[in-house]
Image (cartoon, rainbow over all chains, first blue to last red; front, side, top):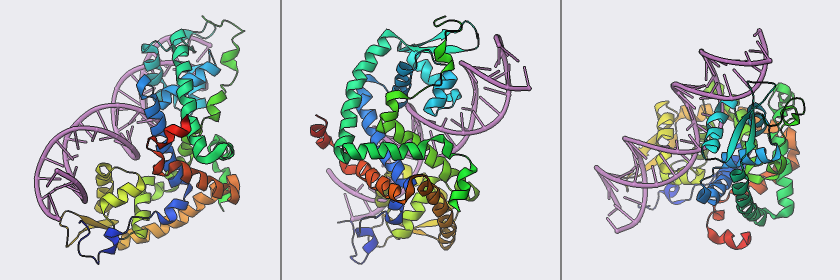
Length: 166
Length: 166
DNA sequence: TATTGTTATACTCTATAACTATA
DNA sequence: TATAGTTATAGAGTATAACAATA
């Protein structure tokens, strides 16, 4: 039975989020967890994690870009980017090429194999996006992307919101 | 070297996200990172992390709830909940009380000290929420919460979206 | 047998400091 | 001096497996 003595209301009543459910940070974290799960499971067959997928997508759209630029665009520290890209490289999905005029820099490219895999992932990714769209509608999806962009654009980090915060 | 001397446009051009920026999973992850940073920094003075805040909020709204119920509501595995709650307990902010009719279970409560701290956190939390609202507007915030709830509600996990996904 | 709480463990993502080789 | 990439390391969050006590 579990709940026992009968008067123990708190144990029986399902836990409600209350004001927490009206908190952007919490609701965002929850949605992110659920969505990440879908990506993770959807790409599990290819052993591609969300971060690796993001890197590959960025490389396709910016061939020859440098590590620092790519990692900045993705919101990853360049220090954390290194092992991620190493993994792609070790698996033959992407490569570093040395740049002539700056021998420190590395230009990043997908390999043929990486592009082939990415085309397979496109299908999976679109299926997953379609599930989200099915949940919130095409219009909801557009709204959501717009709102999240406004929240996530990094111009939002400094103290220039201190004023707005009161 | 790849792209070569001066014509190395990719190295100069800032990296653009491209289609990735139209991907719910990526945009959500980014927004979550930014928002989490705000919470983290906002609560740093009290040494409270977002997860601890969420637990305290849940306890205030559900005094006497059990570990399994609280962790499920927060989307934490009960196995991961244990050390989190241990920390609150060690700091005197919350406590486990044994339940009479089920000697396995623990009923969770905030302590006086925990409630006092939480009242301080309320102010901080509202200031942070106000920043988000300043970015996307009150209407945008309402829309966002609604959309995220629809995405994040865990009814969305099973294979019942396979149909919707086509 | 099933459930509540727990320990141990591992993986992903993130964060800081310090190093190298170039510029 | 500053920058591009790198190494080492630590902290959070999340995942699975297995256990003890109790139901």
